[in-house]
Image 1 (tube, helix red, strand yellow):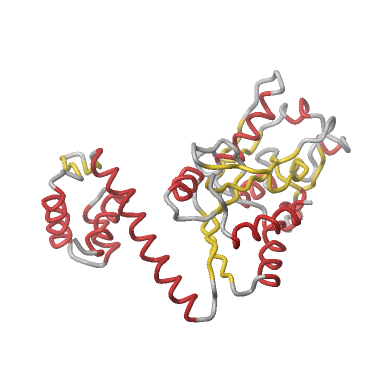
Image 2 (spheres, one colour):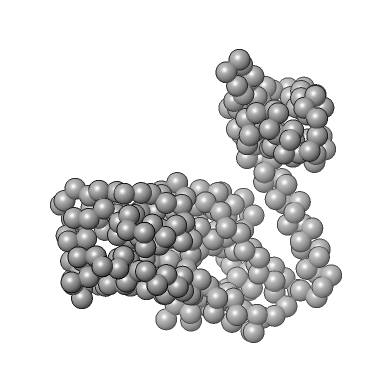
Amino acid sequence: MELRHLRYFIAVAEELHFSRAAERLNIEQSPLSRTIKQLETELEATLLERTSRGTRLTWAGEVFLEDARRTLLCIDQAKANVKAAATGFRGTLRIALSDGIARSRLTPLLALCREEEPDVEIRLFEIPLAQHQRGLRHDLYDAGFAFSNDVDDGLIAEVAWKEPLVIAIPKRHPLLAHKHVPLDEVVKHPLVLCHPEFCEGCSRQLESLLASIDSPITVAERVSTHDLMLTLVAAGYGIGFSSAARIESSHHTDIIIRPLAGHSHVMTTYLLRPDTEPSDQLNNFMQRVARIGL
């Protein structure tokens, strides 16, 4: 089995279409089909079912897809580690990011790491929360940041920092009559919320907040990124939730920030890591996270 076999299989598994996968790989379809057949013969398992209605993964194919992705990631990380060592780095921390973590805290954290431990390379990986947790369990990442503390067995979620939750309102909106907007007034208007598939932890925190109001809500749109949420709010689609720092860093002049009324509402960012004794490098990183989070 060669690495190209894994790359070919991943392309077909993601496209679920041999012609599109061949185009993506810049090869002809017939050698791609032969390679997949050879792979299935070697593994003694059917990975893909081909029918008149299309192509789909078998259960064996789904399992192999996850392992194939992890194998290629390990190879890429091994190459990066050698390159980092050759350029003078003495260690590497692999940090996963999920849920669109705010750059307002991440930027000073990375700057502090470069200042205090310049010979440790920090590599960042933006991935969905489920992949994030699998990677921590399989030693693909050393730690990560997410908005969720609902973690798998063998992992720890610790509070990294908290930021006040505010609402994003388009200009000339009736809610601007409030200096501090009651949540029960917010939910009378259409909302632009993060999509749970792309921002799982953020979605969970907002759902918990909205569940505290005994009122039906209208969701105008569910979005995959913070920037798209702000764009739709600015266009008048609805009201959004965020932190003041994230909105201000986006420079949307057509959006007004208002705090929520009542007791303080916050969005919590968690540091996720394996439930094992951290390395010296990771322990130093965690201490810097604590300083940034103050």
